[in-house]
Image (cartoon, rainbow over all chains, first blue to last red; front, side):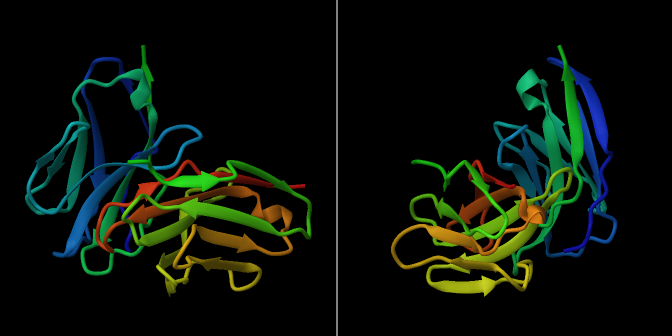
Length: 111
Length: 113
């Protein structure tokens, strides 16, 4: 699995929206974009994933650029419990045996 | 539906001892993955197993480490003759199908004295 590029850290204020960017300029047509997050001292937690279209679930929204070279995870109203490391991961549909984690983005949420 | 369970949550071993880490996947999940997170580093894939079979162990150190997922019972990650460099958090994940979302357990934090 090839790498994705994310900012090392971001800050947000409580109850404001957060946009977490991810660059995957060499993505291939069969790669899905997955987002996981890891809260302090916990295991990673699935957030959302998509292929081409924008996706929404109860946790977040995923906006995928038309050329698929980048995507943005959107937390609509950040809470203190959203403070975590967020990982953007490319994952092939046909050989999804592993997740390749990069360094992720450390999100700090200010009260 | 209970999540992925790992035990023990914390494990302390002296150099040269054996460490056994257990992972019970979610009900109905037959795919198990082990990852390791060294201090101040990211998560690294170690091994992927399906019931009774090792499918991909390309991330596993060649010596001292082994994994199994028997027909009955939890998956076991075994580390023989532990060294200080093995100190890390070990996470297990499971999924119902190979391409499906992976659900992670809380991890086992191994400390080697």
